[in-house]
View 1: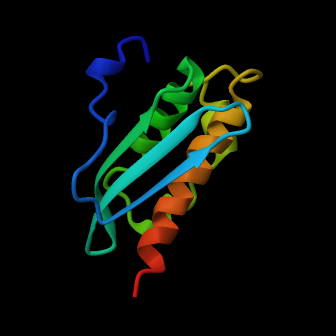
View 2: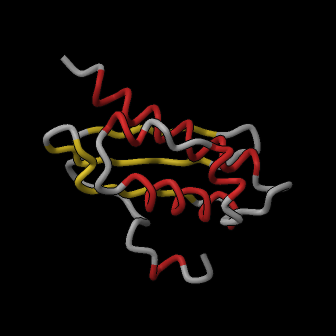
Length: 114
């Protein structure tokens, strides 16, 4: 992603249905915020102050997840993000894992609420 300000998925959300934040081993932090209606991801935002690969991976996950059912969105994998070419396949592997892990934790936040 060359211009992160033009990224419609970048930013935080005031009243998400679910959210999660994870700090990676590299020091980058990733956040995902979800609005879920009728078991479908109606809106999604990611936030990071990490490197370009982390930003690209966050965008790639958000783009794939928007509009999908929770069950279907759980099929998004770090391998898929790496193979897509949306991040550097060598230097960005851990970024893809960070993005997908954070996204899964946000889904878990939704699924585990009473």
